[in-house]
Amino acid sequence: MSGEAAATDRMALVGAGLIGRAWAIVFARAGLPVALWDPAEGVAAAALGTIRERLADLRAAGLIEEAPEQAAARVTVAPTLEAAVAGATHVQEQGPERVEVKRELFARLDALCPRDVVLASSTSGIPASAFTEGLAGRARCLVAHPVNPPYLVPLVELVGAPWTDPAVVARTRALMERVGQVPVTAFRETRGFVLNRLQAALLAEAFRLVRDGVMSVEDVDRCVRDGLGLRWSFMGPFETIDLNAPGGVADYVARFGPLMGGITQEQTPYDYDAPTVTRVAAERRAALPLERIEERSAWRDRRLMALLAHKRGQARG
Image (cartoon, rainbow, N blue to C red):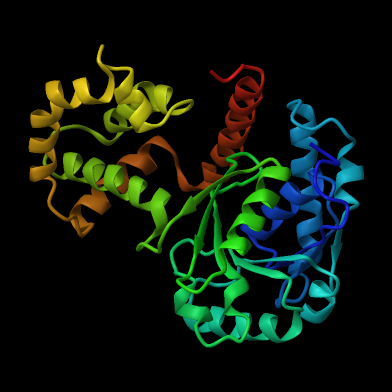
């Protein structure tokens, strides 16, 4: 993917935690210079080692062609926020998930950056309207919400505030496509954005099924891992049902609409009650002790790399 993005693009990453490091990999492997800054001393410098390790993993999986150290060399640590954004064409923020922190940070960014610089937040659920309304440059602000880790799961949700310039959204979408991500655009803000809303619906039902004694935690996981997930790894819910009836979507709804609609009537809001959460956590800890979570996360990433490599090798219909 290296060299695909415009030579004039320069990325500034504000926050060097898990998401900041992952964004650095996305942009660096696409050939872009990246300035990485974090307010906590030493965090950005420590991130460089992780970035090099993950790039080496990607090379080993056949997902990048150039030497990992060549891509890693594009990432530099900035000593200050001012230095990080100097000359940047796109700023990607991933600070704490607190609206007051983002409001203060975006005010600083708005004051520091020329008006043609896009200011994007990686927030998982705070709408841009909550922290950009009072800014003079609010029209160039939006949410660009990735899926963790974005260098393996390429989806990026682009969500503007009511005052975000559509040209800014279009420009950010073009950037994400150039660096190998898969951007989707929301036409308006919603609580939690779209991916989280889809995930919330499935997760709430999974907890309810355990709570109501219908199925074990492991078997619910199997329903997704060895059932729905196989199809969902290469097609979405609308294409799935379109192919599940001879006459497509309309035929599927005619056949199964009453059944599916009746199920949703039973799906009342779920409040993550403590007894069920405790039970699910206990079953997961029996299957995977806490001290092995990091090891299992690395296994997950290797599986994602293998899946991504496979998907890239297949022609999309």
